[in-house]
Image (cartoon, rainbow, N blue to C red):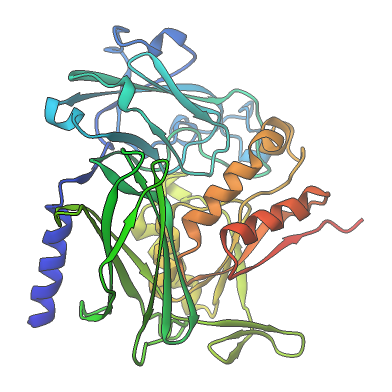
Length: 440
């Protein structure tokens, strides 16, 4: 009963913390398959467009065809250009926030976003999350979000890919300061020690803040907490570190996927809460031995793995938590203990499920670094975007205990590999990096 009450208090603490707010934008979008450049403008009439919800996959929705643009590589499904529009209404109070971001979990591919006719940004890769600070484009009352997704060059992969915004979209706002998105890095250098590095962004160039770290077990019991840390921002940024000891921590493993929750609270000098950030993690330590191979928590494991493409079967590219949980559990039941994400990052919910069910993940970001399919990412955008995509990928996934190895490519080669490995180690020094090289 006591644990239930504590978990309820923690939940209420989170939802009533109005200084940092996130709203899901999944309902009531408008969609049109075709290119209409005027759709970026506020006064464009979209009343005849299709009403949809996000996530959405227009290629799967439109069905199969012998002449489909993805051809045999993509299961004879289509491509093209699609436009999305959504109307949101903001109050003067909501606009008083110092930061407002729009966050996309994933959208395939060549994404361009406008807010009230103003260009907010672009992201080519179809498997990576992206965000834009849109505060300066917003007005009181009615606002229009317009998204252009371009799959006119096909086939753009060597397998079926969805078309459109197939991940969640949300509006995130912050007052005064906030923890940088994916800017918190949790490591467990030993079986009883946890280290947390967090990056803070402030609206003020130089300001003073307080922060505190707490660690909770799966029952909601606080296992350790830090002293209150006082710090200041410099040029609107700060980086803070915590180190805590946990007595008799339960280790994460495939047999016992024990998870803990790290919660950092950010306050001003008057102890007014600015933001709290909770992240699940696991205590586990990895060794690699030339004689014994992969060792987790002192135990040798033989990896019995599969390569899993990101698709939902009868739902196209739309993969729900229920579907992912069913697939991962099915694999575990048949004796599998590892999944390689072939050949791109999966949606965030996939890693959460693998953490909870105890499935190792070999996390792969790219298929090729140069052209493999006729118009793939390697052909269209790799040279200009790979570093940013790679850094965002590592930052997003590095707190998941299920992720034990990064893969930077599939059946590929090139000198850029050295640069990519260096980037991986800059963002995460705890995991090894590999790629599958094509034999010549």
